[in-house]
Image 1 (cartoon, helix red, strand yellow):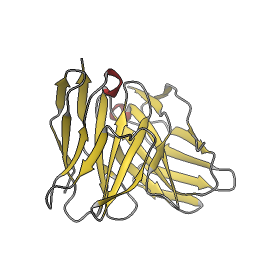
Image 2 (tube, one colour):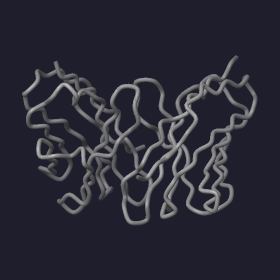
Image 3 (cartoon, rainbow over the protein chains, first blue to last red):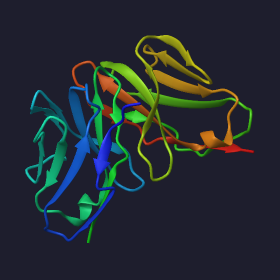
Image 4 (tube, chains in turn brown, green):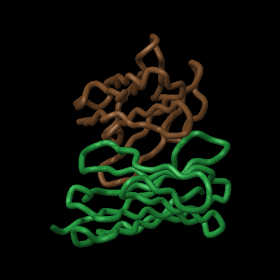
Length: 111
Length: 111
């Protein structure tokens, strides 16, 4: 069964450093998303992406965040200058219609 | 502010019993409703989707939607210890593809 994959599973970085989180959505899906979940809190929407552009973003998704589909399979989330409060699980999701399927997540720890 | 509310639990049921999980949402523009299961430290796993009023059954799971009352529920029949997890309710507006999540209900099924 097709699934969303994410790498790395765990990323540790120092405050102020740039990180890139990678996702491979399900191959025939057209809509891609990033969500995050801070420990003990709700899953929060960050951004949606369709047809090579951002279709919607939340207030969390400020100028330090960017997304890109560099080739036909990968979908990336870049955080330019990480802060302590960026420590969270980051989930990529994709959909072909309405149902969104989540990847296993990347645990980002900012020290 | 679009809100999705769930009782945090834990909801404790004996093995073999019916577990009933509830969710309310604030925005009448919500059109699509989803239940996800999340094991500790893992990503949300889609269990059910429901789009119209009434019941939708899939195996041991039944989702119920009442748009007039802004209420969606999930019934799990013949609960198993492996069903012990946090169940997330997620809502999608007609005008947006993003999911708005509740904080989840923790279910504990006692052997």
